[in-house]
Image (cartoon, rainbow, N blue to C red; front, side, top):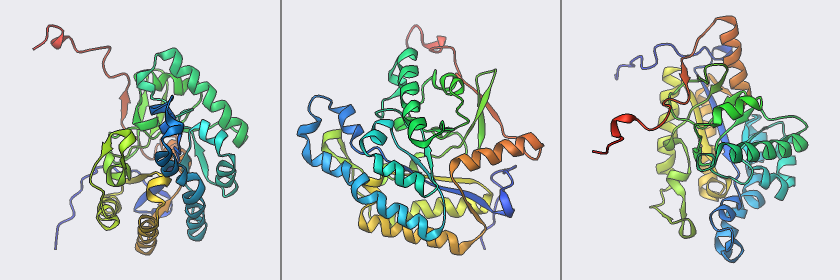
Length: 306
């Protein structure tokens, strides 16, 4: 029998004695990413447009139906432009009690923007979310994980309490600018369906497509390890990719497997972040803190080249 090693020395205690926390998060980018990549020509890329619009039009209703079947609430990251373009989707998400997290205005890349432009799009996008949801968002995932050296300061200024963009651990930790902090809820690329399923000529992304069974081997193995070690399991799905029939059947089977295994806390990211905050406040558990930015600029050792 294989030995179970203690790979996480001090995992956080999860509610009701759960072995791990699980969040199925969905990034419904729809066709925002096509307009961003091909602003002048997006409307002429009809095949790619149809692929991306499959997400809000076909996949989202079956995703919401599955969560109703399992009686769980989760987190959806939807760019604010997509909320304006597909308001019925945002309304359905909120009607089922799910969380809407902030995911940029039109899936812009923060680490390619100046601080002022990043702040402009952040404020503009949050205004849309606040108008639609009736409250300001508490969580953020950077589009394409493109968190910038300015992002933390700007998020703290807007009252964001958690981020879900980074890859620095298997359990929550804090991001601090030296004056204030927020909760980081990390994942990693293997837990993102893009790496397994995405092919798009118009995005110059041509990789071998995995069978759902192959992709689920990875997601399930990561879950089993999280369950053994008390970790946080956050998966990242895109409706236009994983909402397809065979892939979505595999997601349903994965949910069934987790439910049958038991001792799993399914929760939206806002509730996971709130739980971490309560643990810190009570002194029941203390995460590590990462200070950002990590460097004031380019490292001087390479100023003269190699």
